[in-house]
Image (cartoon, rainbow, N blue to C red; front, top):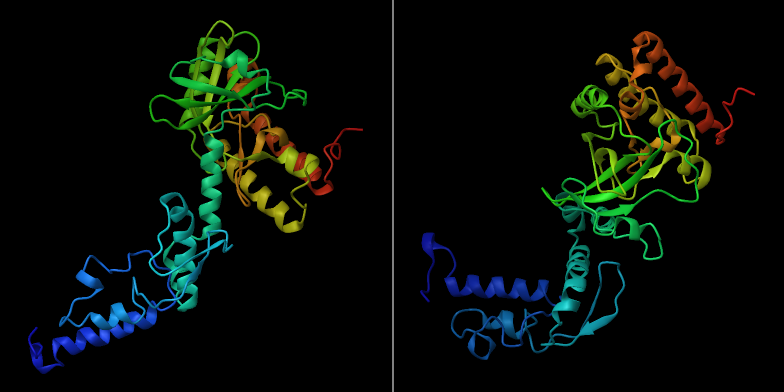
Amino acid sequence: VRSGGRGGGPPQAERFASAGAANAQFNANAPIFAPSGGFGLENGCAHDGGLCGAVHHGGIGAEGAAAVPLVSEAGVGSMSLAPGQHLPPQQLQHFVAGAALAGLRRTGQSSRHDAFFMPETLRAELAQRRAAAMYTGDPSDERLADVAGVVVRNFHSLVPMDDPSRPKRNRAHTSLYQATSEHDGEAYALRLLDGAPAPADAIRAGGHFWCSMQHPNIVRLHDVFTEGSDTLAGTWFVYDFHPNAVTLEWAYFVGRSVHPSEETLWNHALQLLAAMHAVHLAGAALRSLDAARIIMTDKNTIRISAAGLLDVTRPESSRKQMAQTQAEDLQALGRLLLCFACASPMAAAPN
């Protein structure tokens, strides 16, 4: 090692030594994931290279470092590492992230981490959604036997999503399934129209319009077709699948997970108005606004699901004056908001 650096600075050996000392101070309490011999150097050091101070005074793989408790991603410390001890791979994946976050908080860099990396709460939420998208159904559900091995066009692994204990009260009765596409491997929501298949001209007209309608507060319709096996033959509607979504009917009236505050009502009213305004500008109408078919996909986002069902199943009613149909949409929205504000599905009943 030369005694002098470029530009008249301190010798290179001194720079290495100072850097090693800083590294030793920073990693004095860090978990040890490397062997006691350092990074493959003989006897754990590089003599005359300036790295001995880092290795022998608490650096990575130091012999004199104390055992350090590890913190998991949930913030629970359940084990400690002695100097030179290694974690098995299955335990390492659970503790590395938590130990890194603990180190960032200890050195005052947690705010920088939160600014540039994904928060742990968001990471957990995304993991839950991914797990919900791979849900294979309740083994005790007798309906799984009816869809076992059934392939509908390019969709397989059907899982019933309807609650069998709740009656179907909508004007267009459907059965809801979760399925996986063979094209992209993603999960989709499939609605099977109960009863006779819809007319082909109604599928072409209504399906074409709603497949082209894209709005953040409307669950996107991808395809409408008549096909299926002997037991599940009929008209199918293919929608985007939103894992862990709940209907506003359940959130307001059943589970009561949503408190009908003024802020919440304004939030939901503006989103529904935005979706309705986009549909009306396109020259169409929703024709159905039911709490059982409006889903909450996260804390602040709601989406109208099952869009286009009545346009396909009841095309004769769409021949009414569009202005009248759009006015009925506004009336349905008013009744819906009244029910939300009163936390009662009968608040807007005629009697």
